[in-house]
Every structure is written in C-alpha cells, then in structure tokens.
Length: 268
Length: 304
Picture (cartoon, rainbow over the protein chains, first blue to last red):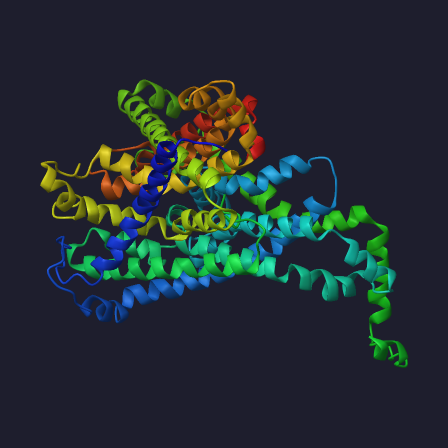
C-alpha cells in the first residue's frame, strides 16, 4: 500500500507518542518509589531505598497482600471449574438458548462494576442475610473471573477440534480416560493461562470488592485506596504501586508464552 | 507403544466396570452431558447473579425508613420521582454522560492513528509486540494508574514541572483531571478493537481509492473511516460503559466533583439508602442498553 512519506512519519510518530504516554505515568510511579522527597517533588532531588524497606515491614500492606492472594486463588479455582464447564457446553453442543448463555457469561464484566457490586451486596445482605466477609468477596470475584477462563478454553477447544478425542475413543478408552489422557493435557496450557489472567483480574479489582468484602478486611487495591489520602503513608503506597506494576507484567508474559490463542487473554 | 501391545492385559482396578458403565451411559445421552456441564455455571450465573440483578431492580421500588434505616418493602415510584425531579441528580446524570462521551471521543481520536500505524506500517512480528505493549498496562492495577495521575497532577508533580517552562500549569484536581485520567485508563480498550478492525481492512481498497484520484484526506473519510467505524464503536462500548460506572478515579483526581457512581456509593455507605442507590444504579444500565440498541445496526456487536 502506498502512503506519502509524511503520512507515514506522522502516524508512526503518533504511535510512538501514544505508547510513551501510556508508559510514562507508570515509569513516574516507579521512579517516585526511590524519590527521597516524601511529597514526590519533581524532579527528584535524591534517591533512597528507605520507602522500599519500610513497605516491606508494613503490617497493613502485608495483611492486605495475604487477603488478596487467598481471594484470588479461591476465585480462580471456582472460575476454572465453572468457566471450563461452560466452555465445553457452548463449544461442543448446539442448543436453544446458547446465545443468551454466552451473553450471561460476559455480563458481569460488561455491566459497570458498581452495578455488579451493589447487586451482590444487596443479595448477600438483604436477601440471604449473610454477613459480608472474605467468602462473599470470593463469590463476587469468581463471578467476573469465569469469563476469562471461558474465553481461553473456548479458543483452545475451537482450535483443537475433536479428532484426537474420537481417536482415543476408537482405540477403546472410555470418556473419563479420554478426558484424563487426551483432552485435559491439550487444555492444560489454556487453563493455566486463563487461571493466571483470572487471578490477575481478581487481584486488581476494587469496585466490586468494596461492596462485597467484610469490614476490617483489606485487599491490596483497597489498602492502597484507604491509604491514598494519608500524606505520611504516600511513599509506602507508592512502593506498593511500583511492586504491582512490576508484578502485572508476569501474568501477561506467562499467558503469552502459554497460549497464542488471543492477545488480550480474554480481557477484551 | 509396541510394549503396550505385547503387555498382558492388566487386571482391571476395582470400580473400573461401574466407571465404564457410567462413561458409556454418558456417551449415549448427550442431553444429560450437556445438562451436567451447564448445571453449575447456570446455577452460579443464571440463578445467583441474574437473581441478584433482578433483586436490585426490585429494590429500586422500595424505600428506606427514615428513622430506623431499615429497608421497607412497600412498592412506590418515590425513588424514581426523586431521581427525575431533583435538579441535582439531573445535573449529575448529564455530567456523567458528558464525561463518558468526552472520554470516548478523546480515546477514539488518540487510538485511531496509533491503531492505523500498527495495522498498516508494522511488520507481523512488530504488530504482535505492539499489541502486547498496548495490552500490558491493562493488567497494571487500575488503582495504580489512577494513583499515578494523582501524583503527576499534584501541585509540585511531573505535569507542573513539564508545563511550567512553557508558561502553563497542570489542570489540578477536578473534572478535567477526571477526563484525562479516565481517557488514559481506557485507551487500550479502544486501541485493540480499532487495530483489529483496521488489520482486517484490505489494503487494495485504499490503493483503489488512490488510483481513482482521491487524496489521502478523501480516502480517509470515504473509505477507511466508514469501514473501520464498527471497530471504533466496539471500542466505544468499553470506554463509554467503563466511564459511566466509575467513581474511584473521580474520587482520586476529581476534587469535589460527583458522578453517578459517587451518588450510588454514598447512598450505600453514608446515607444507608440502598433502594435509592439501586434506582441510581439503573441509570447507567439503561443508558448502556440504549447505547447498545442504537449501535446494534452497525454490526459493532458482532466484532466484540
């Protein structure tokens, strides 16, 4: 395709500039975690590691990290089971109501988080009479994590077809054996990728968590939010933010390595 | 594999026969298999989640006892009347929609040239890397990104330092800061669908337009933009919906400005008026449904 050199240059410059704008704020947070001015005056007058060592000893942040990990792992486990079941049902069968069901799976992330949040809050407190706690937050997280696993597994099922499974059955393996020895090994990397992304989604979530986590508990995003407006906590908040930026690249990298199915890993 | 063939048949483990019967039975009844596969996800999403949404809708018609703070189960349209009559809520609704529209337009304008350069000027390998580069910040915590803008927008922050030499100052905290932050947060959600749409756009059409004598501007408005529009609308569904429901970014960088999300949040927390919060929460849902219905005909929903 032919474009004038100017068009080409201008558009490529726009791309470079856009990417710079996307990464610049993240870089600033990272650099500020070493800024020795606790109010983050820019440019930094000097650099220090003090905030990192203080954050590493901060009880609140560490407790929040533990809560986040427990919530993330539990929600991921539930989402893996339900997402895989739904993926098999929708990819392998044609039935009435198939489209509404696939819409239903996407709904928890398509609706604004605050709607999902207060709907579940209302359901737990008013209808079921359950006190909010870690368990209610796990249920809420699992609800919107299902779609991530679902997307990854559906993409894999579509690619692998069912020739190998039929071959396995022809050779005399029953359904359960076929699943154990043929289907599951082929799905394994998609499940791992979906699970990683579900965990990352749960780890990052704040709005639904605000409405479903019990009083006195904090996940990492809630801890950041609670401490954001306290000036003397700012440097430690900033270190936690920097750690999260670094940590967020891990699931993306691993999910890319594990499955080439979809670039966005089901986030879109 | 040859070893497996010559091996004498191993004795079947206990329970193998019944397992085999179960396998065979399931194989003969695809309806039952489908039922089992669907049961748990449908119980969770169809009954629990949809039920919760339906209950929320019902709660919007209830009221709260002013003295005890308990929810009173009596059907009335009072909440809706307050929502429509009270000028405050009308202003907030218009402001929220305005912010969402502005964010969507800004994101579309920034994302389009970026996506175009990605789709048309980059090699296959570079495209893959660029998609990862655009996507990675999506996984960086939402809160961290909003927080990054809070520290950049602060009085002695980076923006002040960058803009001071040219005689400008950062916008400080307020509605403009909210629009900037939301545009930043949702930009990747616009870039990725638009990139996918432009990637599917055949180069030959652009060349044909050039051969027929159209200049770049004409080609852009008559060929590229109409074909890429469904992708832009697909992206706008994300940016619009995400902006409508947001209340955290506006709390972090918005100063005292209020959006619909803040009204919902405050009614659940401080005011303890769940029915009214439910009524207000229906506003973004209704706006979103109207928007989805409006863009259905463009075919944008099929590209999601």
